[in-house]
Length: 246
Image 1 (cartoon, rainbow, N blue to C red):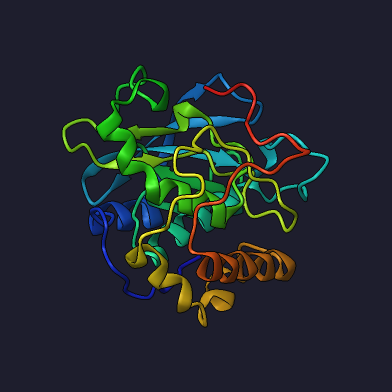
Image 2: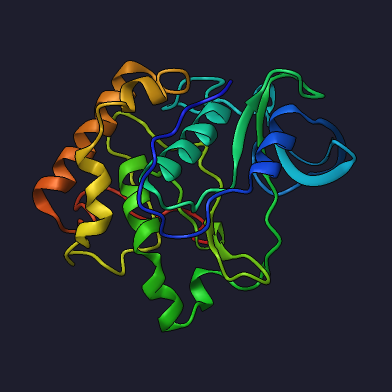
């Protein structure tokens, strides 16, 4: 699958074109398995034009069924998260594509980012936490049901912000669960809201990875944010935090 992204305001560095080409067209081999988590996730080397790149492969048939999400859709939601991050201009999700030719069948393939696994949301400095507004806005739009503290980190050597693990996002019902409520009730910066008023191409952008109802719900969330212009507070009456939080 290939997707055309509309240009938008850059807030961090966009994905490297060479890495995009490698993960889209390169051959990849299994190197190991990530043992944490309920779904099968593999560490792979991607070979393309004489170079080697690290990536994370999540085969669709390795997904454990969830009672509230359609079966065999989590890998596509990983791709949807990347598309949303890019069309917003945030560039906070590593390059992610959907490959039909994986070692264990179709699945998502995501650029692997080197980072310090001990340095995450729960030990960020106050200055680092101030950089998380794009993550928070992204999670609200994506309806992220599992934003754990360890899913947010800074790349080693560049200090670029990234968020990962977006398989249970984009449900049509409200599912937002996150540890990052730091900006609740604060005004959303105008420059971050600007892309939300230009959503005409979003149905065609997401039609290969989300259902029509999920796309409609995404557009509704964007419209609400453009109207309220504030980061929401946790809803009363339901769980607003993931478990475990890290």
